[in-house]
Image 1 (cartoon, rainbow, N blue to C red):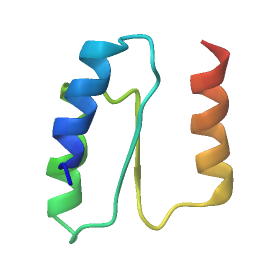
Image 2: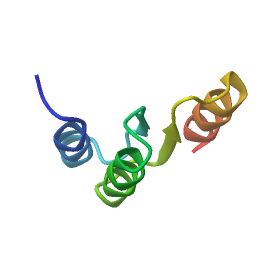
Image 3: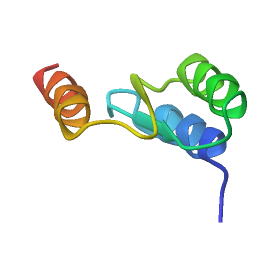
Image 4: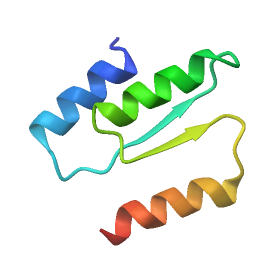
Length: 66
């Protein structure tokens, strides 16, 4: 029942080492602002829908390698 940004902030506060990938499928302008905000509040990677499975796997691999 929470918004994504609020969830990212809480996760990073409680578990700063936890990698977060923010994904948005909002409108053509909305997702850019949302994803920039998500990155500002702690998302390690961002993906805009639609995205390829290769892009998702890359983000996951980078997160797991740290």
